[in-house]
Length: 165
Image 1 (cartoon, rainbow, N blue to C red):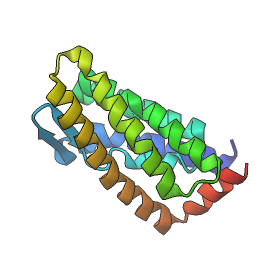
Image 2 (spheres, rainbow, N blue to C red):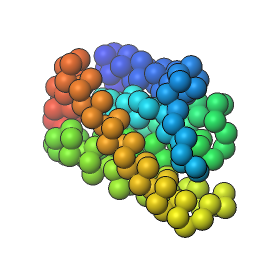
Image 3 (cartoon, one colour):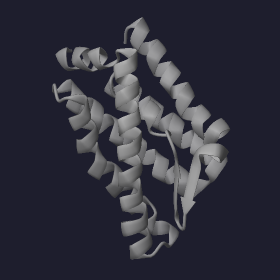
Image 4 (tube, rainbow, N blue to C red):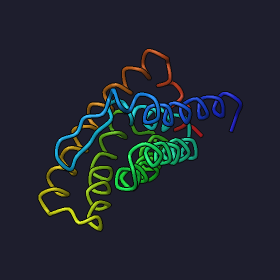
């Protein structure tokens, strides 16, 4: 990793910790068994523009932040962010556009988060519909936010750079 990549990866990792630790109480939405913290995926999605390793690092930090603040079920769901970040970052490395990489990672994200809650005793409706579809909608909202931030900060060029390496 170059210095800029390392610095941005560290910055996005810090944000992925800060969102659940500091902003979680203000940005969290709870609907039955589903909960979402608005903007919690944004650092992960931005990390995909840097490298697969950076995306995985940001995903792991997110899981730790949610473990500290929201307990084991939500932390287990957040562990799926490692795989989601890797999928999107690898697609970017193949030259796919940013929005397509995020859209392609959506079923992986929703599916993993829904599957992760099964051992915790949720019904099929709760894990399939509420968690799965809720995660997909949350992914779309945070993906749109990440795309806007990437464009404003000029990070889309990093995604093009990542696909060239």
